[in-house]
Amino acid sequence: MLIQRTATVLIIVFSLALSVGVQAADFWQDDWSMAQETESPRLKIEALESADAGAIYRAYMDSQPWLYEQLGWSWPSSKTSEEQNTSMVHHMLKQMKRKAGFSFVVTDKQTQQVVGMLFFAPVSSERANGAALDASRFHAEVTWWLGQDAIARSLHNDLFALTTDWLRASWPWAQVLFPVAESNQSALAVLENSAARKVATNRDTREVFYSYTLARK
Image (cartoon, rainbow, N blue to C red):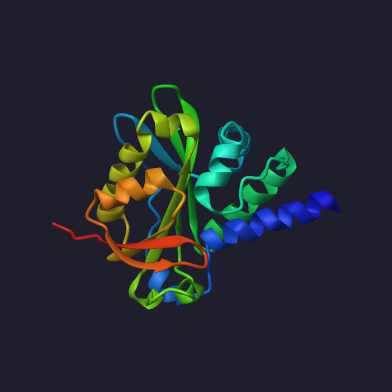
């Protein structure tokens, strides 16, 4: 029962990151195609597969206390088990099959190790609770996590550049939202030094929201 309860909590956390409580047509349409992967000299982003579960688990548990404080997601718990992690991955895969959210693994090409994950999701209307934010303006929201060592090697800068280039080149959205916890200093630094525009703050959840326009050439 304890494992089941904790797995449910994990699924709820990632359901928030991959929320479906919005206008589905704005996020995805049947005739659109999902981009599977992209890469830069330092990083590779690939669509999540069930075989990635173990590498993902090792990546975030190696940085568990640090990620827990940084992300503001009440995750990952120090008690997270491999079984709970597998349940979480299966939940993400089901969402991808329904086109209700997209999850990707981030690999450091130098070490060939998984160092984080990237998520594209619909923007929940609940984002506006406690913040002056019009969620209907955005087609998707983008979140990510990277392990502590990857941040120390400035891979967050590479990940942001690669992700925004990929969104612009291969995805259908025009306006995306970056929700970031006030404690997530590396993500805030990247966004503050980018073309993203700070549009709202939620003092209750201690989140900052950035709008990013994907202008095509």
